[in-house]
Structure formats: C-alpha cells, structure tokens
Image (cartoon, rainbow, N blue to C red; front, top):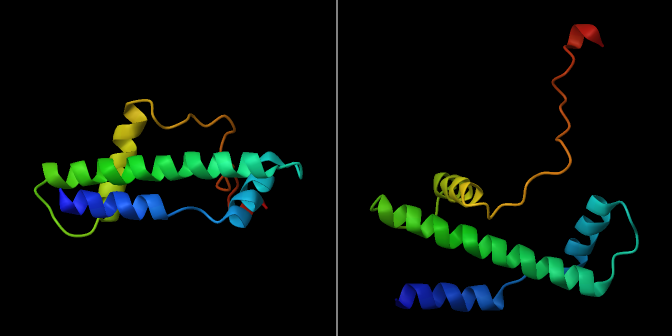
Length: 106
C-alpha cells in the first residue's frame, strides 16, 4: 500500500513539459495554432495514459509474481491489454512504410 502511495505521489508531481508537448502537437496537427489550453489538455491526457500503462504493468508483474522495476516486457503486455480493452485510441493515419522498395528498385 505504501509503495502505491509513493507511486501516486510521484504521479501527482510529474508532468510533461509544456514546450515539448506544444512542439509535438504542432508536428502532429501541422498547424501553428496550438493554444496553451490545448497543450495543457493533451499533457493531462498523456499523463493519464502513462499512468494507466504503469498501473497495468504493475498488475502484469504481480500476476507473474515478479518484483522490482517495470521492464519493457511488462509495458508491452500492459499496452496490449489496454488495446484489447479499447483504451488505446485507434490509428487514423496509416504508418509510413519505408520497406516498400528494395535498394535495387531505387
């Protein structure tokens, strides 16, 4: 219980840098019209999402009877579970694929 309270305290004190979040939003939207309220809202949403992943990763660890720091395998499994539960937004823009052409075709 104390460990969870320490994590919650860290969660409350943590956050994303506003300038970095604004740059990311400008990059994603392609618009320079990113306001401070938009930046604050997206920072909050991102923080909540990271919190969900961390808590789910801790559940994965307890199910596997593992302790210590969260490892990448725990984060991947947490992400997979959240995706199955519909808690991960679907991708609206397809990923760019650079593997379409072989070097001989270029």
